[in-house]
Amino acid sequence: EVKLVESGGGLVQPGGSLRLSCAASGFPFNTYTMNWVRQAPGKGLEWISYISAGSSSIQYADSVKGRFTISRDNTKNSLFLHLSSLRAEDTAVYYCATGSAWPHFDYWGQGTLVTVSS
Amino acid sequence: EVVMTQSPLSLPVTLGQPASISCRSSKSLLHSDGNTYLSWFQQRPGQSPRRLIYKVSNRDSGVPDRFSGSGSGTDFTLRISRVEAEDVGVYYCMQGTHWPPFTFGPGTTVEIK
Image 1 (cartoon, rainbow over the protein chains, first blue to last red):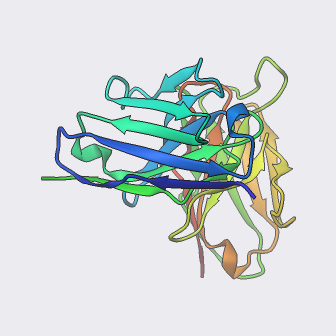
Image 2: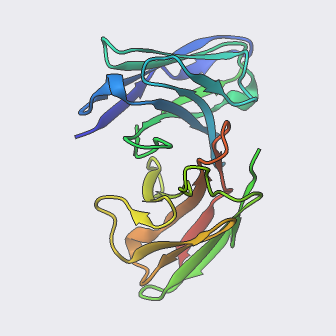
Image 3: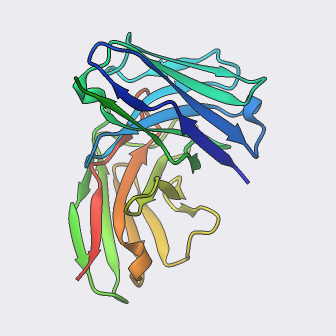
């Protein structure tokens, strides 16, 4: 069974940083691309970042480019998202998602809430 | 960036009756590889999104056959043949053809009358 478990969310002040993790199991993590998607409270879904299986290809949404960094550790079946220079508008539930075929959104985690507030 | 629009944004339905959601993209979603990367997701209240349909009309494993997808180019439709209580939630279309970014529609809220 595919399982994705996000963690690392919490309350952070504007301008602060946070690192989110996504623990994966039930599939060959080192062969799957991964994505991060977020959802602001009461709002829709926004894709924010993509990383290929071997980390050779990385993409970001314009809204987070230069502030967020995606990475993965295939030896630990883990995906990460480092958030920096956080703004109030980054407040959202952050989901990791993956899949076996393009565009790799078959499976989603339960999400982790990031709240940016003073 | 490809803009996805959905209509209606709110859809009150009667149990047992059909429902239909339209999704339109600002450019054709036909990829040069011959596939059309249009997916539909369901998000029940308090839950994570769940993919229902991929590449326009392919149902994911475990998705009831009352859900169906159709369309081509820029116009797509998700149909529920007979709405059940468990179908309440928000439905999103998403394109994966022209990226980055992957883009989602604004969502359609399905509620029971």
